Length: 368
Image 1 (cartoon, rainbow, N blue to C red):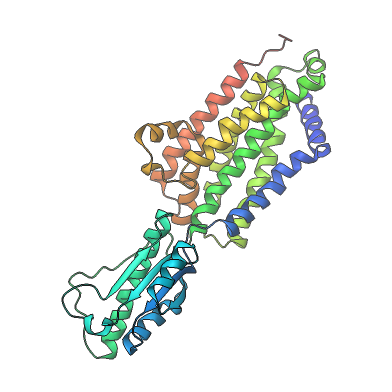
Image 2 (cartoon, rainbow, N blue to C red):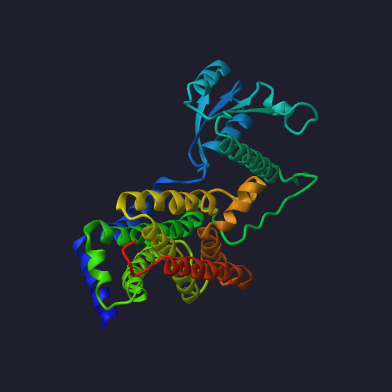
């Protein structure tokens, strides 16, 4: 009954505090809409200049390859100097130049019949555009050979098979990882404030003189926020599947179990911060610096961990979100891959025991 009373008290505080409801339910919607629609790692509608120094049939046909591609916003120029000026002014991201003898050079040995110049300020976009241009060039050569009734002679032919994300949509990669970031904020940030709020308002002294044990106080804080975090997780998964059409190829039960483990880790971290810092301002700042930012940068949510320097990659093993992001991406895109799920789930379980154990050991029913 004492635990039920403490939980009821905490639920009433949550209902009376609009910020808690906003962090749990409004912020996930905002972040998912922002990253789902506003952030994309795909290069589409790239403005590119197409310079044709001769308007022969071959040049016009090749230029049409870019006009009809969803990857390019082709803009035709007749003078190379105008195209260079547009590139320097950042009006276009690249130049494709077809010289006057374009038709004669096709299929003959010697220099390439087209010239590609790219803006390398954004190296990732430049690499993507270079690959797209090469793909468009090969497609055009293939169509040209088929129309002439010939076989295109390519020494090496690459047949690509893209697994797990055949549409090559960055949204399918970003949205599952964003669920981990949202749950980190809900679990760690909200819980980091609960004990500090009791000390600031002077209600902790009243709790300490009651017959309730410290374990009951901690459970009375954890269980309501666990339920709140679960609601935020369900909302995020629902938006990912039905709004952004991210495939959920694995079991929802596995996803829910892994999310519950990660939520316990986040709650444990937040509770430990709240016990150590007795003011809400300090607790909130520490929670953002030690949980949200590392989860955002070092979890593999956006940046590939294997591409990081070895000492930074070693640091990621201390970030709980790393393990949960791996499970999320596996369950959403590949299915229940137990060789991925089990080791990461065990790591989350160990971290949950560690942080909750530290929180309990640092909690004493005294004012000091």
